[in-house]
Amino acid sequence: MTDIGKELIFFSLEVNRLDDAQLEKQYSQSERLQHFMPWIRDCRSFRPYQLSDELETLLHEKSVTGRQSWVRLFDETLAALKFPFDSDELSCAAILDKLSSPDESIRKKAAKSIGDILAKNNRLFVQIMNVIVKDKAIEDQWRKFPKPISSRNVSNYIEDHIVEALIDSVEKNYANLSHRYYKMKAKWLGKEKLEYWDRNAPLPKQEEKIIPWAEAVDIVLGAYGRFSPRMAEIGKQFFDKNWVDAPVREGKESGAFSHSTVPSVHPYILMNYQGKPRDVMTLAHELGHGIHQCLSASQGIMAYTPLTLAETASVFGEQLTFRALLDRQKDHDNRKLMIAQKVEDMINTVVRQIAFCEFERKVHDLRKDGELSAEAINQAWMSVQARSLGEGIRFDEEYQYYWSYISHFVHSPFYVYSYAFGDCLVNALYGVYQEQPQGFAEKYIAMLTAGGTLRHKELLAPFGLDAGDPRFWQKGLDVIAGFIDELEA
Image (cartoon, rainbow, N blue to C red; front, side, top):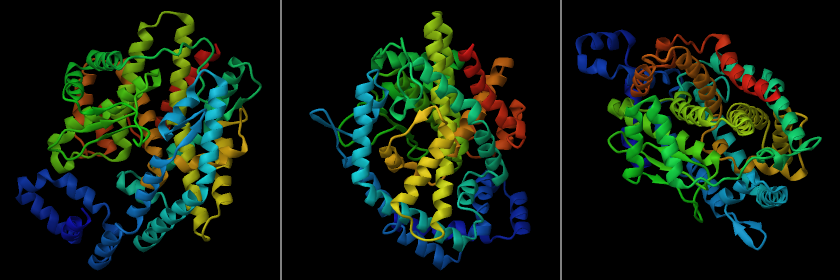
């Protein structure tokens, strides 16, 4: 792939060397060229940061022995780790699942095992982080990006000030969201403070019902179908044609994703389904990605959306599934439990991901002064966790190593704020849907079909929304606060 890329790299470099006036003249003379205007627009957004042809080729060729090899080392190391648990040894995905067990002794044992194994591998993970961050800093310096996060913003085709407004809004709401909720959860669990392994613990009276795979598929497709039969029809193909790899097995990567491959081929979904209600929401999330990828495939090379908008369809799919389940739930206690679970997921998506972004900013800023010690990285992690999660949670010493299994820090620096962007955007979108359901599904499908041909301002305009408005982010955060208000009442 690197060799093929080397032969093609000249193309985008030459597109970026075209004169603006010359390009406008060519647009006016060719309808066929006009079709590719969005791709050319996106390509030229990197124009101010482009290096010489020789340097671009060198960076591209060396990536296979540089950054890419460190990413591969991280992936293979994490996949090979075994976490002792009773008489067994579990994979990373399987041991992390134990943290949501209803039995506190199981949660604690799993948490301690995770901390112990990550601590034993801390030296390697610290080295990987140092190399990845320094590698990025060198390239950013040559390209003259003003901040470590700027290259991600450019690749997301989003202005720095909008991302700063999102991060600032979420950080200002830490106390009103996560701090308030976790103090309330501690009381529900009969504790003064939550231990860190209690953060995702089931609530009292919460049934640990295992939902069979077939039932999960029916729930998710039903929720999509009530919103849009066309979306459900696209989603059904993933199960009929075996495009989903769901079971947990040894050596399989933890987490979940939908991979779009290339526009002419259908996407594939990978997940680790274990029958928890949260797994059903993960299925709804990844199917949203898959449907989005199918709809936008007609755009060809312009099918791919920036990360900020890529999370829109997935989080909206979660919202549809959650609301469908909530509407069916008439029991007061079960309804309360469902809302609490949704709040926890939203906190994980918004507060926790922005805290991850804050951790990355700290690490990338500290790295400018030289190689970072394990203590420096671990301390940055702990300070951010304490600030974002609040006084309602107590951390033990081994929690300082928990940053090291989060693959986004290695795979895609600063990717994480995209989740918060998507969640707040979806909350605002869903509010419009509730107020004006007529014709909403058609506009929504048109937005997904556009793929990467339109920017966020153009995509949101038909819904009367503008991410540049400071009130936009608070509107999304108020949805989470409203759920917490309902739980307090």
